[in-house]
Length: 102
Image 1 (cartoon, rainbow, N blue to C red):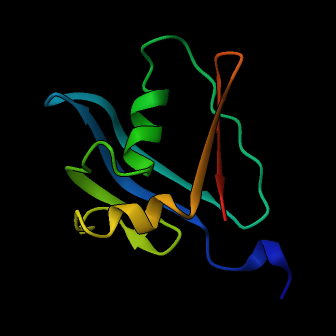
Image 2 (image 1 turned 90 degrees about the horizontal axis):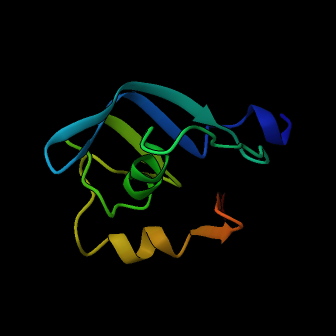
C-alpha cells in the first residue's frame, strides 16, 4: 500500500460551516490524503478562512462530520484542541493561506 492509498488525513462529510450562526458553506465534502498538497482559493467572503478555522477547531462544527489527523471535530473537547493544533501548521504568506498536517 503506497502513501496515497491510506485513510485521509482530512475528511469532510456533509459539513456546514457557520460564522455567528450564519451559514457560510453548506454540504462540504472532501478528502485530503497523506502527502497531498491542496490549494484553497476563492473570492473574499467565500468561506476559505471559516473553513480553515473550523479545521483547527477555532469555529465549532455545528452539523456534519470532519476529521483532522484523527480528531473528529463534531465531538472534539476543549481539552483536545491544543493536541489537534500541534499536528497542524497554517502559514500566512502574501495573503495566501497554507495548511499542513503532520
